[in-house]
Image 1 (cartoon, rainbow, N blue to C red):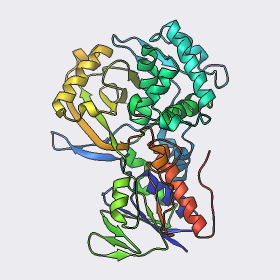
Image 2: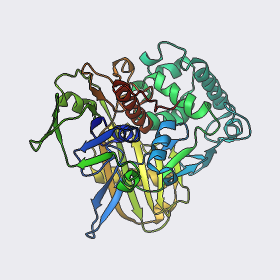
Image 3: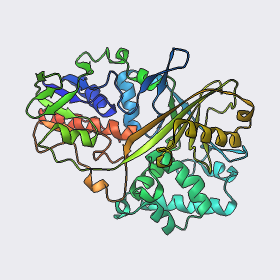
Image 4: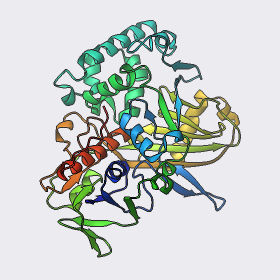
Length: 431
């Protein structure tokens, strides 16, 4: 049975391990942290009363169009742990709510009825938005320069009005890609819209885990994959012909997979030349109130710092997400809490009547690589100049931006490359 040593227990490494472990390979996953999941996981945060809160580092969601992420959850038997939502709620300051949902028409016209009822855009803005959507459909995958121009440039070319850019394009795309429009390659922006909003009538539906992210990858989900073994708190020092660990021990395998961030991959193997990308941060804020402040399950908040609100429990525990949150990085936790509570009162009047019991701010400074114009050509594939050394991660060339779907695709692509090298080629990536 061929052996594979996977360095890194994030989504890319886990996906590769699941695919290979179910295909006759002996897989050992070495993870430096005491838990799996990488940047999509949960932590125990000490609470003031001596207890601890198990919290996701950030609210990660998926769409129905994330076919490989869904397949990964299926492999783990975790599909039932995702709750699906057919409505996107947009809230304006003042509390007015509009919802976007599929109607009776087939794709790509399934949002026609919803567009007519969106109250945060004028009739003229809606016409412009439809023109923009048609341009996406006509240009996605066909225009050669999309990877080298910014999404902001593309929107300007399409004469998209300021309100449409601000309240639709930016609201959707910055959350999806974790980068501002002027620093985001247009190819990624068009892909999100084409795949999530125009491809199928249900591709936009949003899946929110019903359990913490850590529970999605818990040991129970791996029992039916006995060929996959995990070693946590096992930090790898180098991979050059063999794998050396920080404690001085070493291990060998037939194949090695570095499923780690790009800067870590370069440090692990002197024989690799890994491109350098910049990072884009995400900030997540948990707030607990003494009474319910909303009955909405989630919402995207317009015209303010907060991008998304997720109702984590009875309307009293809210998780707020700010993508590409460079403006918050140098603020203290209390400054951030004060800012978002003030903003929340503009959307949910009940916040002004409620008492804030506790809060938690989580800053992920290296949440994703920046999907900047020109970066796509730098993203490497899964093979390297070393015949038994492979790489995976959302920063590799997956055809997707830095998302959970992109991470899983990279793991599957690496697994395909390893099975091919072993003479037993398999296909794992789904369209």
